Structure formats: C-alpha cells, structure tokens
Length: 76
Image (cartoon, rainbow, N blue to C red):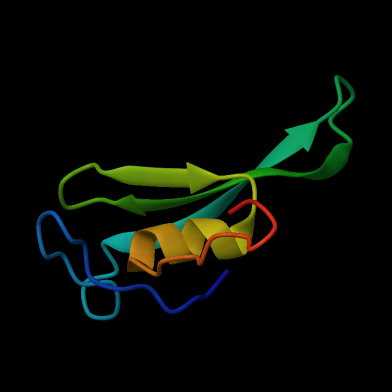
C-alpha cells in the first residue's frame, strides 16, 4: 500500500527517501486462515519505533500527517 506520508515528527526519518516510515494493514483471519478483512491500519517509523494506529485508513494517515479533523457540527 502506497500513501503520501510525512517524515517522522519525532526523529525526522524520511518516508520517501529512506523508506523508514511505512503504512501497513493488519488482517483479521479465521482459524482456517480465511481472510475476513482489514482489522487495523498503522503507520510505523523504523527510525525511532513510533507507531500510530486506527480502525480507518484515512484517520490513521491524517493522524500521522498531522491533519486536524474538524469536529462534527452535530456534537457542538
């Protein structure tokens, strides 16, 4: 999976040049090994070990990239 990722905000490892910052997906499997789907998405920095995870891909990428999600107007 290839996505636009910012450099690590903690150690500065670059996503594009070193390949030290990577996005991944964790699959949920049955006991027989049948894939049921994606369980969680993560972005991990192999430079310093920081990981962020979320149930939704867009939310995980936004969290890593520092994108603020506006609050739901129905909640305010």
